[in-house]
Amino acid sequence: MADEMLMTFRHPHVALLGNGRGNKVYASMKEFPAVDSGEGIASPRIAVILPCYNEAGAIVRTVEDFRRALPSAEIYVFDNNSSDGSRELAAGAGAIVRRVAQQGKGHVVRRMFADVDADIYIMADGDATYEAAAAPRMVAAMLEDNLDMVVGSRRSEIEEAYRRGHRFGNWALTSLLKQLFGRSFTDILSGYRVFSRRFVKSFPVLSAGFEIETEISVHALELGMPVAEVVTAYGARPEGSVSKLSTYRDGWRILRTILTLYRIERPVLFFGIIAALLAASGLILAAPLILTYMETGLVPRFPTAILVTGLMILATLSGMCGLILDTVVRGRREVRRLAYLALRAPSDFDRRD
View 1 (cartoon, rainbow, N blue to C red):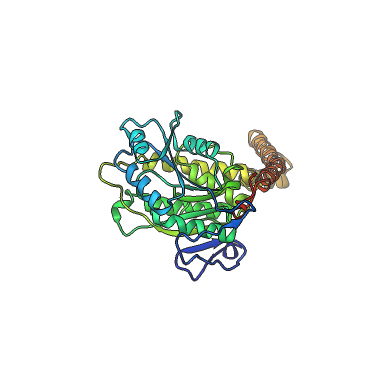
View 2 (view 1 turned 135 degrees about the vertical axis):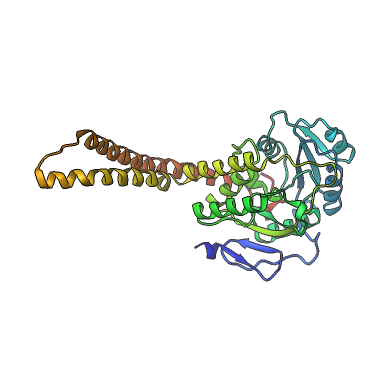
């Protein structure tokens, strides 16, 4: 199933998660389709949304790079309590600057998705590490195949672009997500993504910190959205820019988020595993008691018998919880799907909701 959902096309930069249809890539980096809406030629409204926290050494360059790549796009910088003048520098570079008081990338993304109105959203970090020149290619892929998310899968030849342990951590978490949910991306922690309007306006952001990328990936996979990955360059931070990601603390938060989402989205399997472990423990403890009873007709160890009874009751309750919660999750998934379908597809940008 995973092989059917993930296929790599002849174009060296695009891998599409979908139904196996071919994917045309625009020859021109800025050749976006336009339609005649009856009142003139319409083109998609594109918003570049950049979370920012103390990025004085990189935010101006980031804004300028995206301005060159997408001259007609509106560029928003959502400042998260910077104390180094990042907000003033971004405004001076021509960006629309908003302030988010709640600390954490998840809180920033929640505000960005709620406050910005556009047809296509390009999210990147304000640290100038992502390839802004790849944005038109990612937008073109989205419009051509009516995708809801295009992930910029990072490729770097510069060792300094990744902090120690980040490559392994990204690989481990991506592999775990694939094992738990059946399919995944090649880079679930990438902060460079292009979203459709219907993705942004139907996604209930619950995360607070850097685990937001994991939540976004699981949301797309669970609703079966058409998504793609585009290989993009990933560079080292400019001098003066410091990573805010803590390898172990944020890695643990991301791992915890994956397990929590697995419990929420796969309750039958999650609680079924617990039920199986409890039942297996009960059976192992019960085996000597059963053999003794068959030989003598007596149950000599009542505490063990009581423990076995308790374990089997807990196993039954756990299994029933999984079945009940599965019905609840199915209802929630249907509601989310209906909210998603109520919004227009990316190629219908001439029709306003």
